[in-house]
Image (cartoon, rainbow, N blue to C red; front, side):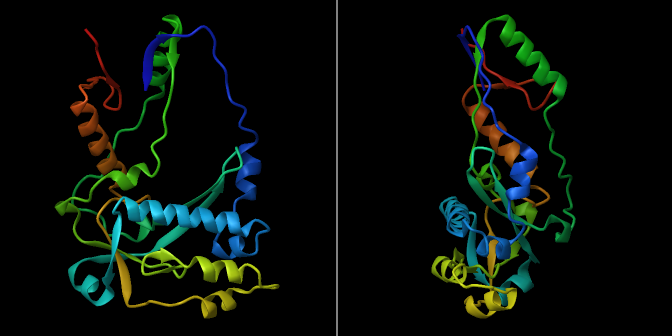
Length: 238
């Protein structure tokens, strides 16, 4: 979002090496449990799942019912250490395993020319530019009836839809931990799946549903959509 207030100078935050940050990021849950900062990573998993629950992203359902009424898609954890040191865990769907929707999932993306033009204009007007981040943005978009019934496999780290915190932290303290130990120690719930009520990262239609949700919200606040670039919205004050 760009504000119309004047500003005399610009400052840029030093983010550090992106490559180094990626190399530090665990590739899977096993990497997290043998990591020297495993507690921080486990806590980030808890934060992610708690955010999904608060957003009403999914509910626990019987697998037998899910097989009859919809499709079940596997999930994967994606971990990243941010350049500022924060740990981010994201639970994503395996979109490559999803049945192709019967509708177009195309969602417009920002054009570089539009961004350059906006920056040039605001610098010329000596305006202050600001930005915001919407946490778990895709998870704030509702699934629609046309999306059908979509369920997710419950990863081993979850039980009743929540992270097995104590079990994971106990496992992280075991010397020479193996993947087999993890499977044996975690509680299992193979007869349960997670029914999606809101979109999740990795789902083929997530970007489309989020764009529709954001567009509706901006219209309610009086913004107008550019006819030249569908992801550019502007607000005119009298």
